[in-house]
Length: 366
Figure 1 (cartoon, helix red, strand yellow):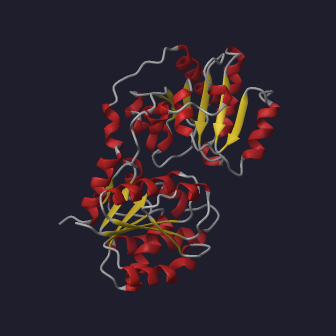
Figure 2 (cartoon, one colour):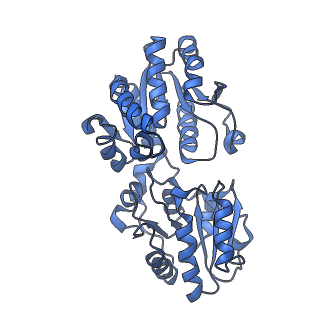
Figure 3 (tube, one colour):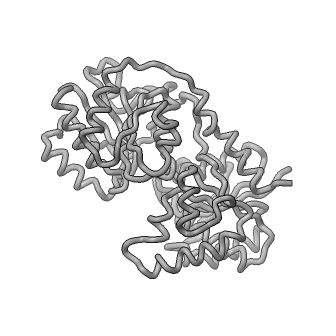
């Protein structure tokens, strides 16, 4: 049955939540549904990747409070059959807007980050009080409540206090085919004929990704493997600090930060090792993509996703958070092993079609 399905995100920045929304929307459209993607502002790296089959609707707001009235008008005018919201603030805005619009739309909330970061922020006592109360009041109005990992779902039961049995774990949809191997990498360090191993990481240059630990660990790696190099794909406010650290460690010629990559799957496929150094993750899309490309991985054992993705270390090395010595040891051990293509069946749980099937059943159980 053809239905109208809406999704909402803040902007089209190149983050995991935004990419997930595009993947979901594209698959819903492929299945014959009418798909609307609501954004507060139509800006960010992914603007150029907007699929033609998705209707992009800009609410023209600075934040979710400003976007509430335009959101209500959209609901009354278009009356979608199903709605998928993302991020805690987006979830609350969607549930409140549906109440105000008084339209029979089934809302699925999705939580993809550690609830403590949002509901108990260190910089705002007011938000620490208000947001958990709002969540406990509004979340029961959702047709379904989704967390992107069991860890996030468990944390939702503590902060903001949503009954655990009412939260479904639905992983982010990832193309688990080795698609990056179809194209050649763009970065010169990753092209054929290079000398020495290349380690890469992908993500925002933000404190939560803890690239400082990765750079410190790589400095120790270089003391043993003087031919090793590190590429950090991404962008963010921590770039100046990371640049300063790289220079202080004498790694300027061995560490490169080329910015955002449109061909990141090809870069991952060509790398010798993928490393995730995060302090926290909701799931860890890039880690899954690395496994899909057959790239060996090292990850911090951070809350919440890596341990679930790697099944306790079965599919890659897990190291303690913020421990450059342990990370350097794991990187050196991984680089010393031959790259072997292993069993891929564990990746099926992230398959796009399987995940979209779950969302359709949650929105339209009949």
